[in-house]
Image (cartoon, rainbow, N blue to C red; front, side, top):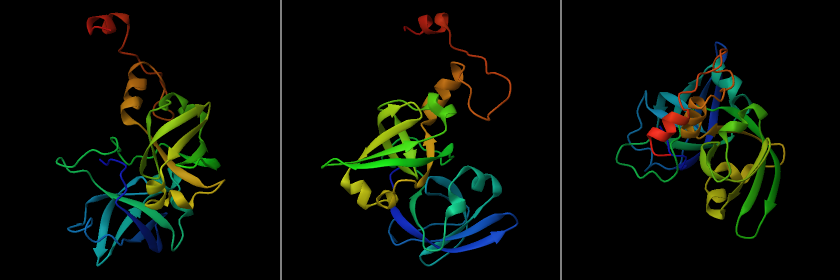
Length: 221
């Protein structure tokens, strides 16, 4: 589990095809935050939870399988691509963002970028069937960065990003047409599941809602 608070911006220094997947070598600069990194540890790479399979001085490698490549932007990574990095949450860490699993729901496309003086407003379009899982003022993860939905218009939403976040993540690289990884708030997805909203591709039979009027009344609503 992660928080969406990026600890370092790394670079892809190696890409090796492996049986339909990819082995990625990631260079990192922030030695302090990656002290003690070990094989089998989980690391968020651009919002995608990956397992460390090899490591060395200032680098680690992960294997991305076909499922990951089909649901994320990893297939577009190139030698030298910059990526947001975060190590897994420890029980004693401060939860500065929100609960992030590193399980990407879908890609999204940058529609527009606007400079607003004290912030940068970025608009994204996403697959419409995921609409029930995003709410205005709710949390969302974009390429591993925990952000707040500032505006929501159908299958489009905007976030307002402060200069510090722009400077310390890969969000400064985004341009109109750029692709990003989206993970919707897991708590919102569970609520939507319980009240009967269908999670795309999760199952074919319609879910049964466990929440009804009597359930709410019993709990003081």
